[in-house]
Every structure is written in C-alpha cells, then in structure tokens.
Image (cartoon, rainbow, N blue to C red):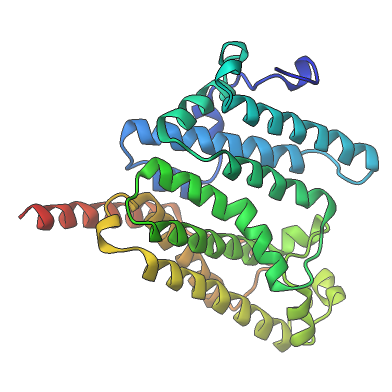
Length: 303
C-alpha cells in the first residue's frame, strides 16, 4: 500500500545484503545464532538501517528536506501498520516488508517497538540538543532499547526480567555510541551529551565545537563513561542464569561495546582526534569466548 507512489514502495533489496553492510559488532554477535534466528535478526537490522538512513542521508537543513524525510518515515509507519493487518497481506510487495512480516508473525513481535523506533529516529530531524539526561534517556530507549526488546523476542526468553535487561543494555550501547561518535556528531550539528552535564563540568557548547581538550573535558567524559558502565552493570544483574544460553548474541554485543569504553578510557578520551574502535580480532575472539562459554554452560546443565 505505497501511499507515496513507486518512490516509496517496499524495499526490494536483498535483506541479507543490506544488513551485512553495517556494523561488524552486529555481524559477530549474530553469527552464532541458529540460521532462522540469524535471518530474523538481519531482517530487523535491515529495517533499522532503512529507517536510520532516511534520517541521515542527504541534507536536513531546510523545511522541505525535513518534510520529505518525514513523509518517508510516515510511509514506513503506515507500512508497519499494514504488516500487522491480515487483510493487507495480499497487497504487500516483495522485499523487506514481506520478510519483516514473516519475522513479526513467527516471533509475535509487538508493533509498538517498531513505531517507537521510527519516532526516535524522526526526533533527530528536529532535536539536536538534550537539556537533561532524562530527556536523552527517552531518546536512547526509542532508538536502542526498542531494538533490544525486538531482539529478545527472536532469541526467546521466559523470565519477564529479561525485558528490563534488554532496555538497560540498550541504554548502555547507545551511550557508548554517543561517546565514541562525539566528534562526528558535533560536525553534523548534534550534541547528545546532556547540556546539564556540560554546565556541571563548566565545559561549554562552544568548547565542544572547537574540540577543546582540557581537564574539564576529561572530567565530563569520565562521568559519561561511568554512566554508561552503570547501565552495563545494571543489565548484567538483570540477566538470570537460565536466560544466558538464549542471550548469547546480546552478551557478545555487551562485551564488545564494553571493551570500546575501556579503549576510549585508555586513550584518555581522545575522541576529537582519534576514531577509537575494537579490532576485528578482538571482536571475533570475544564472540568465540562467549559462545563457547554458553556451550559449556549447557553441558553442565545436562550433566
């Protein structure tokens, strides 16, 4: 039901091709999933990339640019509604929409998670600053925790506490992204660090724009890293032992991104001058270690 004509019809690209062009952290996290779950996660990731690309591709400076992007996001909202409407199944075109509908039906994924994700990405079109952490936390929930909530439906979970695990891990991962991408976001006109934090550490918005590296900046970044770590630790306390077997992919993401925080700290928060990342070798080793640990855990349960 493309309401904007052929320009906005369901994406016909191969889902796996779309999803594997993104983050290698996601790639290694999902590689150890069973085939059906791996395909489902890649389909969801392709959807997330599609929504994110609408916001990020091309300029968003003029009212016309923003209006066009909002139209495209609204088309996807309508498409999501159609995916949950059995009467619309026969009119869905092939491609991402069709693949996503299969995943939704197979794993009973709540519709609101997809709609909240779209709302969160749309927020980037109109909001470039966050006054408080509570405000930023709402954004992190929309663009990251929702992905976690979708993912645990695919992984399979029994303990209701696992939902809170996914939410808090989403906060942790997004806060880590914000720290890592600080310099690039500033160049794009975005400051995700809460303005109340800048004021607290007496580090101005202009200092950020100028890339001023001083003791105030280091104190500010130390605080940001500590906050992100808090949510990693909170998530870990919420994951009960019997759920660890099904949450292997999430635990791999946790470990890789936590290592990224460590590296940022080891580089003394030099995010203005360096693109700090985790090596491919370390990502692979981490994924193997956690996967093997899960296998040993299963053996102990059976023994």
